[in-house]
Amino acid sequence: ARSCAELGLRRITVVGHSMGGRVAALLALLRPDLVARLVLVDAALDPAYIARYGRRMLRLREIERSVALSRRLGRGLGRFIRPAAHDHAGGIVRPLLRRAYYSGLADPRALHHYVTALYEESLDQRLPDITQPTLVITGERDPLVLPHQAYRAAEAIPNARLAIIPRALHNPMDDRPALFYRALLEFLDSTPAAGL
Image (tube, rainbow, N blue to C red; front, side):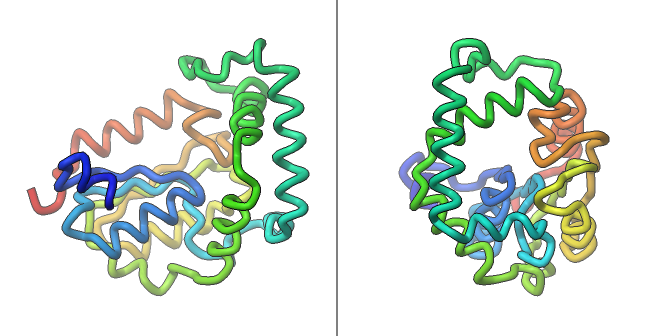
């Protein structure tokens, strides 16, 4: 919200993925005057819908190990995966390696704070208070934030639509980019921003 104020932005469309989806939902709830439209992508809104193995990330040591492994992968494979190149046809291997590269850039302590916050509070009961037009996107095979979370969010949020990206995992914008962007652009093109 402070960044928007500094940039002179009065009404925005917010797209948030995973933990960023939670941040986007909170921004929509706290600042409905600022958020005109909302897109939640495999958003971690309720810890009940996070796969059991996700709880490992509540331990700082696990996050530190994960980031260290990603750094090693990134150093070894970075020149082959061109981390900045996102004009690709999707798939599993290249996107996975690219995400490992970016994960290696994370600050383990900051990531630990985000994960801890996820498990401290469910946004489930607050979803009906989101009034902005909303698109809820999920990868059909998301192993981390279970797709039932997206069904629940689309049902609970008034003015929400649901888009399921077939054969996509937790990062549908990377696994199946053409289908992801089609769903996103259809929503943006057909949905007027609230309050404008």
